[in-house]
Image 1 (cartoon, rainbow, N blue to C red):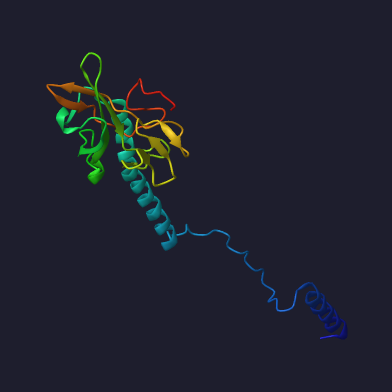
Image 2 (spheres, helix red, strand yellow; image 1 turned 45 degrees about the vertical axis):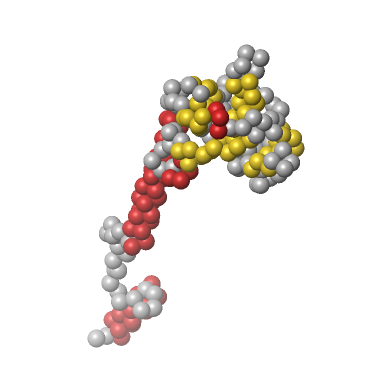
Length: 213
């Protein structure tokens, strides 16, 4: 091999070494494979779906009583009457608590279906007809059961200090009105009332019970 050929080969090798980066084998590398197989479901995703499903089931279960209450409120019967007892069982000018099982109860009410009312016998009017005041036990503020104190002649709420006079009118405290009054009647010498639902300002026990006092 002549000197010129050795020089030519040496120059070609030097040029290739300058063009290729260190560690390059001289072969064109394959580009990175950007395609990825679809990810398999992970345990975390499984538990997320499981939690969402259980939450949906729980929401349905909890919502059934509420929906039932709304439907019951719209279809509330007005032909039902509860007999509290004979008129003679309620002495005149006395207030007594009378408890009973509410026929408006729902299967999920449990012990809450055992409710009560306060009955006050006002005596007879000028036509010799019996007159009563029948109050729901619920405070007109937030619905807590009130207690009758005969010594002071007052109804008192233990929750937020609501106070009512013997006639049910508002005396003091946060309640916006007096006690809710039940619809009553006397049939064959027995006092009857319409079963009370949970009373509110928008839905009192009697359509005529709109007094603010």
